[in-house]
Image (cartoon, rainbow, N blue to C red; front, side, top):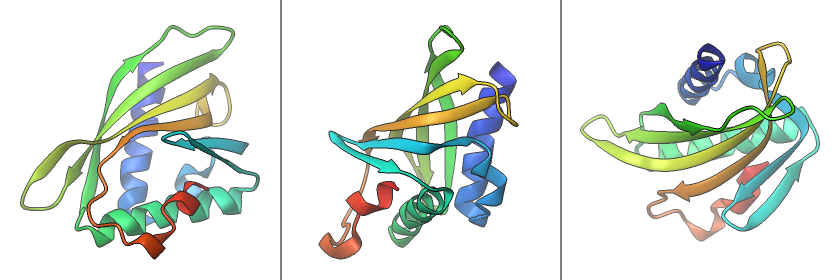
Amino acid sequence: MEREIQAMIDAHAAFFVTLDFAAISDWYAVPLAVYLGEDLQVCTTREEVMAGLTARVMIFRGQGVKRLVGSCAATDLPKSGSLRVWVQWDYDFGDRIEPCGSQVIYYCRRGGPRGLTIQMLQNTRMLMKDVPPDSHVEASAC
């Protein structure tokens, strides 16, 4: 299981650089529930998932983030084939690292092409500096 979790983190870090959604598409179930703080949005198609992830990457890039460095902070024991994975994302600005820029809980189930399938995301911390009000941050969840 540890190998699958690290592969999930690595795939998402690579997506930040490449924007190759095909490389991470298999990680996601559709529909996908996404919590940004208390706000829930549901992505009902792969296209919505791709658009949301891409929009978030573009917001972070616009703030100067060059890459994300993820680490598994915790997991719970799988129960009925499901588990939660807490990931801490550090932001690499090139000249400095902002530790714990984001914390995300990935609600996963065992199985699927990658060994894990993400069914829901919960963003518990997001360091967003100077995000313009018209950037549709909330719309970028899906």
